[in-house]
Length: 489
Image (cartoon, rainbow, N blue to C red; front, top):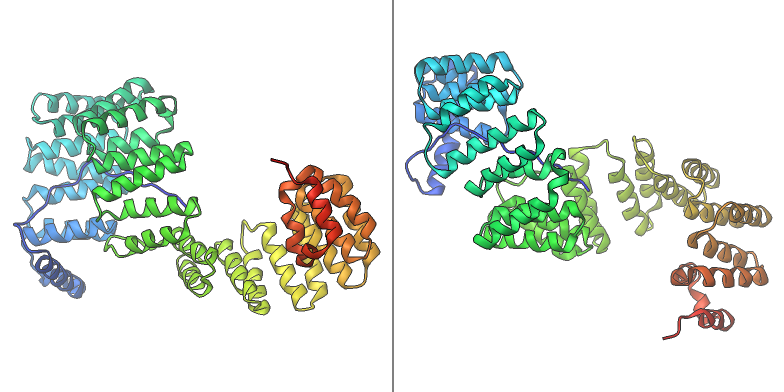
């Protein structure tokens, strides 16, 4: 629910400065950003060093502001024409933007100013693979194999080999190449992303878990492998195993917001709302946390389930700011206001929900219940009919509509409606609701007959009737019928 994973880029141009205290470095970056952005209109007069351009490029890239990254790269090239690093940035951003001709034009410039640069060759390899130029990519790959040193570089080459094999539909060989990449460098995230997300590797999922277990046996302190183990179990539907893996990743690297978010989401999925909210709080305390509709929906829902309705409404308000087209935000806001018996505001929000694409019968039911509470019977009837038009086996809507008929004095119509529906289908909600309708219309004998049928088929759901009529707890005859069907130890 509300999940989206973005693959990491396999290569980014290197950048760095001498070690600087974090606060001082942050202040220096803020000052640099202010100089650049304040003077952006007249940037012809702004001159920056190569190191300053490097800082700007890294910042905008990490913010996923690729247009601004490209602008800075162009300005850097204008001032430092013979520096190869800035052509690397141009090639990378054009690749991300799927601008093939521009990417290769930047690489051609790069080959002039840095013909034997290893990073430049790796970037050329990445761009060639990305745009499906397999033969020249193979040539660059073989050239690099004779020159690179170290497991991390050979891991990158194995990764690109795996991508090329995948393009050639040689999926098992591709899988083996990518697993070799991870064995050589267990922190090689692009290879891990491909292994866990590529649909071509579904047949090898058990082998992937075996790889993760092998790597964790060698190094149980690898937070990244724990994280991907959690993703594996999450995809497999094993929520508890996923939770444990995310907890391990989080304990090994407490300042990684993605680990906090996955851990919080899994706690939410397991209905552990208080713990989930603590994890979401930790996530939002990070400078790298991203505001998203999905996350604020989960935060809001957690507060709602804990009956902290004001905090829930605040979170849903943030979700609206991020994506006001989603119907479920307004549905849940409607639920919050309905719980407070603020029927008019609740109806307004349900009304906004049913105006949006993808809304469910639940939204119409909620709207109908609000109108009924406001004695707006025609509007309520219309809403219940709309809910049933979307799902003619929506038992909650059937019973709500029947209750409205009873309250309007149309008892015969209500009973006919419920009994006709019972002839079409039966489930626990419908039959216990039918018992309630018969009791409301003083058809006790018929109600008890239906109750016996309901208890014989759906005993585990009998609390539905008590929720509808709490006073039935004091009804000795009905309590005796409950006892008759109660399972014996």
